[in-house]
Amino acid sequence: MKRSFIYILVIVLTIGFVLSKYYIQKDLENVPIDAIQEFESGKYIQDDLDTFKEIIDSESIKSSLTIENKQNDTEKVKYDYVLKVSETKGSYLYKIGDDESYLIFDATGTAKFNLFSNETITIYNLPLDSTYKVEQVENSKYKTKVGDETTLVGEGNIFIDSKVTFNNISVGSKEYTPDTADGIKLIMMLLIIASLSIMFLTRLKVQRFTTE
Image (cartoon, rainbow, N blue to C red):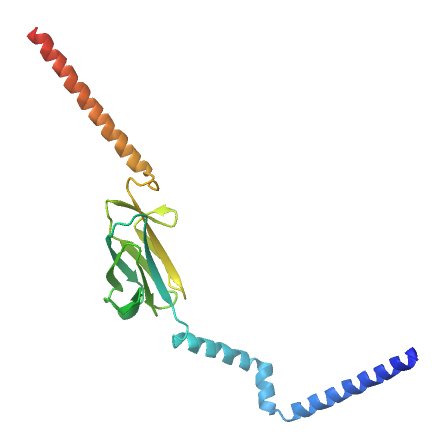
């Protein structure tokens, strides 16, 4: 019984295989010979690449640059920024919160804008792979970091979702850690004060000695 079942299964599979080859062959006969030659030559692959390039050129793939301002206290501060983007001029849509408008880049690709504490701006449709450099104007009440580096400048390339964050830490807060240069300045100031104090006390003693 088992042997008969196996024979029947083999026959059914064989018939199915033969029929599938027959119908595939019939379908191929209906395909124009030019299409087959184009497929074998890789034309379809090239067409796909051309289509992808057209999508990029038509800006169907959207690029953006987000500049985020972070501040570690509740004081409302206005920060000024200068942004320069290569291969860019004219007006570009931007959004701050729910407000939308256009940012104007001059012939050198430079634009200026400002953000208040903990605000974020996103600028849309900048040229893909162009370079950008954004600088925050210094505020003496805050130390600014981009990533792990103490700096006022963020830079990179424009991709689909580029982003740079300026972390502003108030001087004197728990999060604030003086830079090495700041520590050296403080030590020098203390030494100068100590030297002046010693000179003053010495002069005072000399005056007292001469009067006696």
